[in-house]
Length: 278
Image 1 (tube, rainbow, N blue to C red):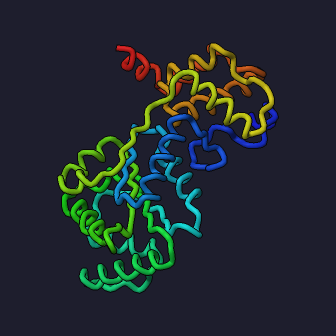
Image 2 (cartoon, rainbow, N blue to C red):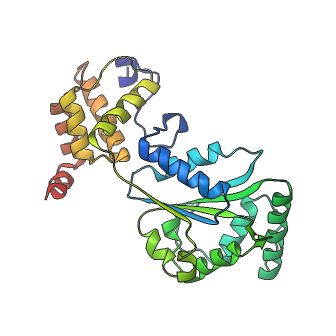
């Protein structure tokens, strides 16, 4: 038996893998989506969403991609996994994501292919959108200049592509490498950690999606989770997952603050909490 059976759940409620059915549409996430969609629908060219580690940027990017209808948008999500990339690599990736294959190596020909594809999308009555996650990994001036060059592709005064960059706050520094590009940011939104009431709602929401019909966490446990996680969704998930395992091992039907304190101590989060309190 696992804690899933013990607590009569259908699945694990607090994994940190991205699963859009567990997407929690908090007030700020809802506002972020509305603002980003406005930037896309009006073809603003460049929108930016930043947030600290574990605040839900990737989940939001996946949610946005899911909500961009194939009938209205030619959309793609590009995830940057390392910083050692070139402008040429980025340009090829963007073109590939938009559905073009057999790309040449010549830069001029690549740009010609991109222009043609963007014009085709425009003539189909659709909007080209590329979401880029972990964009703080784009750390060179040359790459920022590449973005600016692509954003110059227009027809009848209308931009033919919109980029939405998701990244940690360091992304602002990357964008500052090219001041003309930074000035083209049409919309910027910053995700904050949850307030205590939102943390509680988030935990209850994920439990409900996983099939829970009871209050597994006591009120003082919920308060402790918020205090130790500082309202950061990824840490909330980690603490709750470990707490449910600990509760199962002790055959406790309800998780109290004592279990939370032991779990965060085992995870080494108590020092983080003290540092934040200073």
